[in-house]
Length: 287
Image 1 (spheres, rainbow, N blue to C red):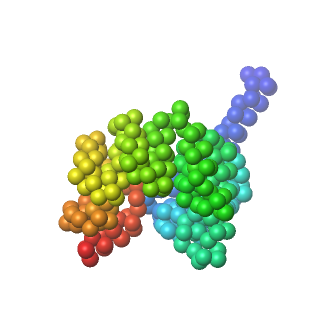
Image 2 (cartoon, rainbow, N blue to C red):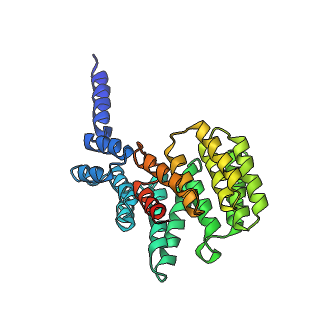
Image 3 (cartoon, one colour):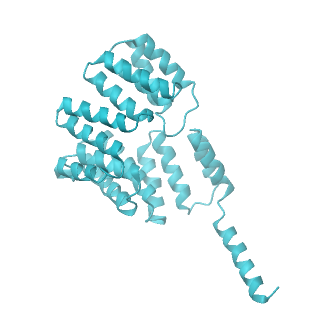
């Protein structure tokens, strides 16, 4: 083989070694998908520290465990190491958002503004990041204009999904209408989102929950049955149906049954947490 060929092979081998993920991080990712957050944090303690992926995964674990201050600290380090990661900015925005929700009045505005900044950066870095777009939309919808939110921004962001994701577009229109207390229009938009994506359990659950909030319990039950026909063991279905019952103070025995099934399910990080379910279960038991 020529000298040039040997050099090229050596370069490829060195590159593959340089970019190979640490086995500890690979194992940590697997544990994270099984919601073993404490185990992930213990394992990552032995992985080389100056690694954006390590800090990001640590931050996500702290977030899932409800320690939002540690989550933001870890994610800040991840962002400093990899400032062009849309995902890292998104999760840092989430951590600051939850800190704002749980902080004192004097510190909440600053934390909320940081959340907005990182949501906007996440969306700017990757317009295809649907989670970043969704979180930014929710921020604009809920936050006052003095904190960089406001209905005009929410409407403008919703319009960007009109052709890209029609079901999401109508969901956002529903959220806007509900925020404006235009209940009939909101219901129509939730139904339109279901019509456009009838096999997506989340869309059906959005409708079922909204109908329950309106006191339309019979129609809400029909929607929950529709979701059950699609995926009867979906953890989100079990959780959301139980939550709707508890919030409306009805069917509490059924709510407890659903939550026990949820707690015995194999959960993913995208599902509601066991902590949230346990809190709901306590509410259901006290009536």
